[in-house]
Amino acid sequence: MIKILESKNKNFDDKLINLLFKRKSKIQFKSATVTKIIRDVKKNGDKAILKYEKKFNKNNVIVPSANQISKSIKSLDKKVKNAIDLAYTRIHKFHSLQKFKNISYTDKLKNKLEYKYVPIESVAIYVPGSTASYPSSVLMNAIPAIVAGVKRVIMINPGYKGKQNPAVLYAARKCKIKEIYSIGGPSAIAAAAYGTKRIKKVNKIVGPGNAFVAAAKKEVFGDVGIEGMTAGPSEVTIICDKFSNPEWVASDLIGQAEHDNLAQCILISKDKNIVEKVK
Image (cartoon, rainbow, N blue to C red; front, side, top):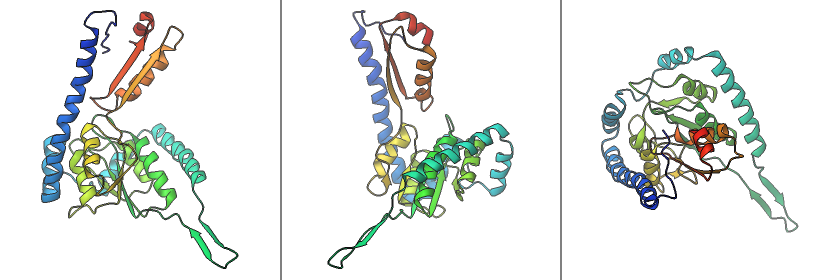
């Protein structure tokens, strides 16, 4: 549902400020909650993880069995498998071309000079799995790690009642990810950052997530690496006019809105007709 604000109305400024502040205040509240969850996991490990999984995902499975994974993948539509296979090939080719070369030479003074690119030992990929599931998140995060030569790649993917998305699981198998955990949220980020009895900690955590996940990654940064930005919840502002394609505008808005309930997608236009077409 698109909420329309008229800039000519007297109370426009107040309505806009309230709309923006409502989301900001919710994100700040979540940050405080996240800190408590991370402390709990650091202290109580797997016990804390199971507590939050039962509370938020009705899940009591941390590590899905090989049989569970295979059974789920079997249910996947062949067309989706083919699409994932094609995407894997294309993404792998791109990152293979991106790879740097080591430098090694001896100068005139017989000094040997070297510059080496060394991959990190381990990385955790966070793949959303509650509101929406993205096999693309697996491919776009795991493949660069594979090309770089990272030895240990693990996947954190929350599932509802222990059930994970088959397309996500197939993408993980395609990337030969051996460690898959059916957990999510700040507790999963804490587990990857600090380790538990079941989950060995990693050097870096990457991948998109909701406001809770983004806040958790900011919280653990320094103890563990994260990507240069924390993705989520999404924000996009689109400016359009009567010449714009309403289908393209709608697609761009939906593309960000689907990430999280707190995603903020704003459309600005002087033309009411295009707004109605987008709606």
